[in-house]
Length: 404
Ligand code: FAD
Image 1 (cartoon, rainbow, N blue to C red):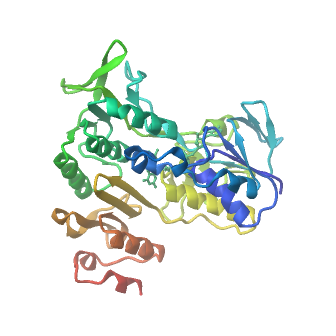
Image 2: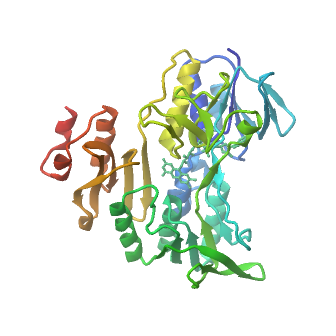
Image 3: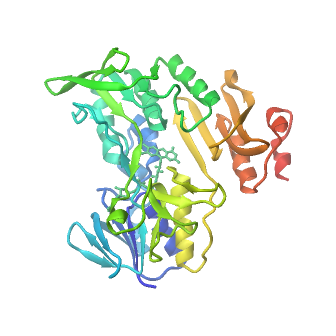
């Protein structure tokens, strides 16, 4: 079938290469890496890594020797164009690579804030290792951080900055934190916990300008007329999928690179996986683009299996986590479209789960400091089963019995 070229060496790209070799793929495997590091884990960038002092090597999936031993060619560079008729990829260096199959694992990039002064050195983003490193380095010299966006990354950073002794304010346009991703019950819990920790959260407001003097940030102005002093601004307003390479090659794109239920683009020699892929999902109906490690790695395994003769529909079960201060949030399933939330446990006791239902069907579970509920959810949903809402709410009901 010829060489497999993988563009992007993040969670999806790395896993695709590793899984191909694991499944016995014997032709050439090239992993094109435009970051100046061995492939690494992204989630700690806003969690343990930024909090601690461990070096970049603590994040690497594998040491260099692994790629050498597995004959995975790590190619430093950037793919700039695809010639689908000739089945070649052109790198920025001018190097041209032939492919039998091309895997696009280009991920996503930060959505940039379109405000004056947003490109000053004190305005930071958090997607790649170099950004986490830079932020970790300047934090000790800063006293007041304003975080724009109360999504997972913004809040994870906010708790760390607070633990490090900074004054922290978070501004968010939506009426509650993580509004697109979690139930109101879970938003309320985290809002209260962050406020207890001394973080000020401003909801329903937008940043209208960043003020600076002599190139140094002095504060952020809000849409309600207030002004928050700051010497550090961290922006977490979401990402844009990297679809341009595919689009310029004439592949259909929308809010992601469009792929079918096998993760194939309209070109049978090109797949797309992970954050950049808008995939058809028979299980959830319609198209989905997800941003999670589970999604990227399960996509990668599915494509590697197909390329080694074990073709099946992609049917992964979504799960996710976020660490904020002392709290661990874990999500099993996809809760979009829920119409009813049943709580198990007590938010006041700092350990509870929100079971999300559509009618009587369990869609997903958001667990806070209840790893057992989370694992239960993944197993139950993996078996395509539901759980009666009254059983979910009843703490004397043994969840394990629903798995038998
Ligand atoms: P990425 O990991 O983004 O990798 C894509 C790679 O492709 C990048 O290195 C990019 O530079 C490269 N690339 C792009 N274009 C080209 C090109 N033309 N040529 C060569 N290379 C190219 N998910 C969770 O499930 N749990 C978490 O707790 C969690 N925390 C996160 C915290 C942070 C700070 C961030 C940023 C993300 C977090 N995520 C988390 C999301 C998760 O990391 C992503 O969903 C995952 O990395 C997606 O993998 P991917 O391979 O699709 O893309």
